[in-house]
Image (cartoon, rainbow, N blue to C red; front, side, top):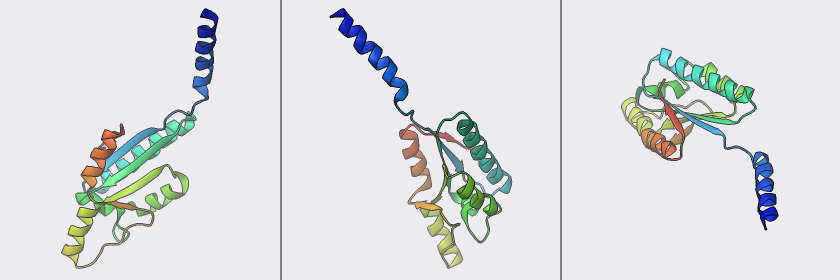
Length: 143
């Protein structure tokens, strides 16, 4: 009986490393229309992505933009558009989410739907999306 318990314990210990580890999960908030902060968000995303990839670990990163930070994801005015397009090519583990409420407010104000950079997703409420991610054990950072 004792040998059976030890055998099962050894089997579990050797099988554990074979299971894939959960990816690290980081959500970055941008709510200011400051290009310096937008660059900071992208710098953090790139640094974290390189860090974990360099260690052979997976990391999922999402940038959630609302209020003034939405300008970061607008095709006709983003001061970091080229970098975001580059992320899509070189760091597919980084995604971008726009707040639908902010988009609607901007559309009413400007009389047209502002165009998003290709590949940007839209959620109803940016802050609620961050809350949902936090409740799913994502780390939320506002650089």
